[in-house]
Length: 415
Image (tube, rainbow, N blue to C red):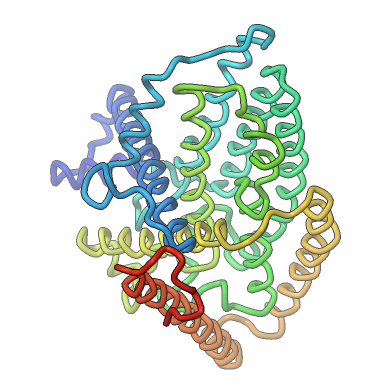
């Protein structure tokens, strides 16, 4: 925390804080400043992401989506937020009123506190904890506490079913999520999020994603498990609108209802940032050494841009998956976790140990294998981008051809 305060004051006032001036007042001021910046970022990211997700959903489903409030509908999330803030805050008569009111704040606090240890660039982190990964896993456990509190205190069977599903799902998938990061921690030798990024490089073949086939398996497992912990499709069983009305937040309204989807969209950044820092090189800038990066504020901002771009791409993929995959059943959710993900994680951990002994990072053979794996991965990325581009322009051409034609124009005659 003190190092980050020095960096901030060096940037603002062109001079670091002297040891004698670093008093409790400066420390408190810095803490409140960082908390305000993180809260501003989390709230605005959640709002903007809600708009982007609705536009992506509309594009996938060949419809328009929000496009009225503001240019191209960009202010729709602001209108929705104001509407929910002005709505009446209802509390059911037979609910446990104290727990009912407190539950949303547990959910948001657990996610908001995770931003403290997440990096945004070289040196741009609220607190570079030496147990950063452990802290993120521990603090996000408050989310399931808030969800269970909200579901139980609502005195509604639909909310209770959703809360029980969420407890079973999040607690189960915390195990493969944590296990899938053990190879990354072994390769780095540290739990610090910044150290994990520094141990990688700016080029794809220097990322842990392509370190070995075992780390690639861990990446897939971590991604699937993080989706389950974030209640994202295909694991949105705690909400399951077609079965449970709205799940654990059925009885909520107004501002307290707003907190639940806001936390879900903010959680997208947490998930994507963890994927980026653990497997995609984090804020590492291609062809720029860390020693050079630390000597220029322009390069530090560039590293922040690299991290934001990588994280935003992962966010886009998660959103796209929501409107592509169907929801799994409860028994399938449990089966996937305990029958496949956990055993594969344990096998990948042992495989990574053996790989580290046979192919040390510095050897030519390890470099050649990483180059081959990264080439295959980039090939799949190219095919994915081409497919998205084809679908986008195909839908656009179909829409243009429908102009002026009857609503019942036969779809098989479209281009």
